[in-house]
Length: 504
Image (cartoon, rainbow, N blue to C red; front, top):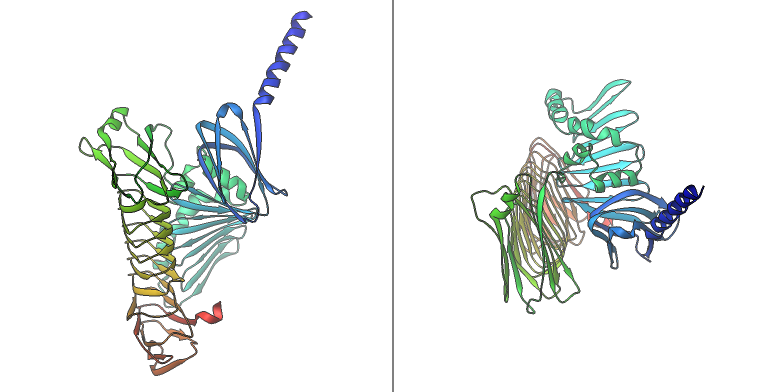
């Protein structure tokens, strides 16, 4: 009996210790409708919405969870693989990044934004919007595909085709079933109908056995057999220093913060022998021109190098270069060049001129106080709120530009163009082929207009348009009192000219 009682007492004491190690913290974000979440070496036990006003984080004290908060950001990180539970106010929306993809979710939906697709889950269906204007919807009724001129519905009722009678249906099916639909049906149907928070947990945790879904939309999920080496250092650069970073084979993320030192985290990783890690050296030179470089000690070592850098606000960017990885900058400054191959460019809130170049990956730029010149290939460009001159070039990808007062050049091949034009400071060519152009023009715009397409039509209801010549596929004339030449040209598709003021 005494032995049994002793066992019960020990069990109770152990349970008490475990209970004491459980920690719950609550965080308020008053006035913020959207909260940014950051997870580093953290796994979610569960995530739920509730009717309260605080974000509740539950974790085990032994996991040594580090929590940082700012005006809109809740960052959770751990030296170990911390397991946490989250309760989120259902009245707010949330955003997090995962290997180059931007994920947005609330109590009703989750959306994944990558270079080439927007993937949106609601509680009863999945929608995918691709960069070539194709829409795919998977729900209870079946599969719906909407192309520029074609609509195909596949359900228990059979196959319904609506659209351009002259379009070659076999070519349409070859493109659709050979690409987007095949990928989605194969990898994503199992997630249709799940709640947004469950899908968010799935993405954050990189759940084993489900990585195929994430990989199909550009995620580079970590392999459990990966060997890695992490270097973390802090520097106190001189005021007004300029940062240059030259990397090979890996992503770069640079953020500004309100501390007086620079924090650099470098992760070397390989799926091969650990000896591969020693074939890559990091060289750092301090000074007014602060430089960091990845150097290979042997030919083509099989190593990826990831950089995450937090900068004091007065430190400016100079040349940021990598290959096979994205470049992300946020709240930064300086006239700089961003160069990568096979990686996206993601720019948010930058003060200074930017020259950005990549290939085979998309470009997103928002809130730039300066000139912006960007070029890519085989991917889309999205630009919003740039104060000075904008030039955008791509091929086989779309271009969308909003709230940019000065456009100097907009050029793509085989991709749609969507622009807002408020005023012209120079002649402007807007050119693509095999894709539509949609322009929203201010009624205050004074310009000479030359518009043409082949095998398409021109649609316009612009006020203040004086047409010299007009037909189904050609238009020339003046907007307002005339001025700089606005030349708009495509082929095998339509051109839409709309009044920006009526849309506001």
